[in-house]
Length: 285
Image (cartoon, rainbow, N blue to C red; front, side, top):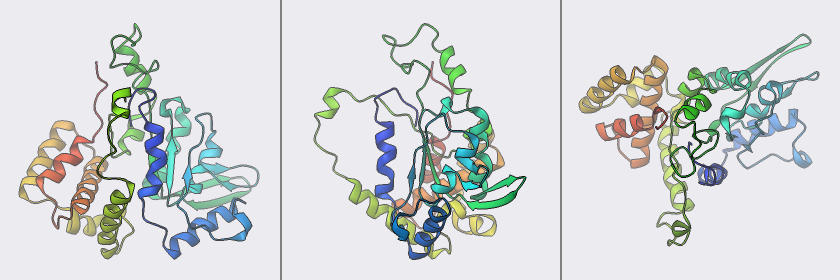
């Protein structure tokens, strides 16, 4: 999520666990095992809630991926099957962020030390938030600094391209005015959204996976191949946007998920178009 300070990015991230489906018994056991190894299991009881971890941007590589003299799970493993929220993304050390690239790709993290070699699960829903530039007001001429728009390019370039390529949805969050706060509540609340998410996850479970993020190979081709119009649009976009093979695969998964949320049996052009709209855009001038 990219937007000015006070737009509600952190609030949106903290609400995400509330729309995720509850842990299955097997998932609850996995989460509890990680927490037990880290010494965080309260009263020896199995954890029933999805983890939400939000480490500060000063966190070290060992804190994020695991390590230490007595090797312990890091934040990415403590968020297994839950949400890992990285606020102020460019403020993290670049090497620390890049250490997440392998866990995000494989769903596990390998910690190698002189006295131990340990693998921890790390299948997380990564949510990141950042201001468009250091001053945070790139889109507001009255508040933006004198270095705009170059400050935005410099600030956002702190996050490496390969790391950004692993983030499927890039969303611009507009500022919220006092008039917006006075509007009536939305027609669809968290409970309604959670019901749609649960229905989509049920479809994905029927495919023999936890979520569409695990679709790969023949299963990806079978369940996520778009119709003719969607395939044509995707191929045109792949050439124009110079999508990597990883980005192309991720677009298929996102389009399949959008179709699942809409209850559509087949991935169509409209689902591909929405998935493509979430790809990273260049900083706004």
